[in-house]
Length: 246
Image (tube, rainbow, N blue to C red):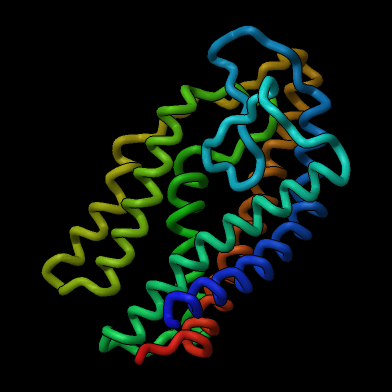
């Protein structure tokens, strides 16, 4: 019963948070992506790796693979992807929150304290690996090896999440270890280019893409903050209201 409640709650939370983020993405983020795609060129260099543009998490954008058609099909596929990602995160959040409410001596989690968990999620999956490391990239950005970026992103996200949990739940004697764990991927350094560069070498295109890149980072940061806070608040509410241990 408890597992079923967690899965059902996560599905509802994922649909709500993923859909609302999808609306924001369609209005604020996708126009930047479409504008950048107008400057894309076909290149043969192996160093040119075109990023995906949903959560800037290092997945590749392979033009030879299947891609949804422009218009409704693309909007729908992006929305479905957002909802699935939101469901996955909400399953983790609701599970941890429910375990916290069952086992921890700390104050129980509700929608208000869930917001703090959402901020923790934001720090783990976006701020630390993306804003401090591999910045969200628009189409046509030249980037390092996809495999190296993916490994570093996963390491940074995992280390940040683990470090935050140690800081909150750990004894005083090991809290310093949490800070070290958070800082370690940043000290190692993200596999990024020395400077922002694009496949399109036209000066006018570079100027336009540089401006779009700055706008993209701001828009994705705001979008991810909204997404994570929504997930945290809704998951906190669901873990208190719908998950019961017997």
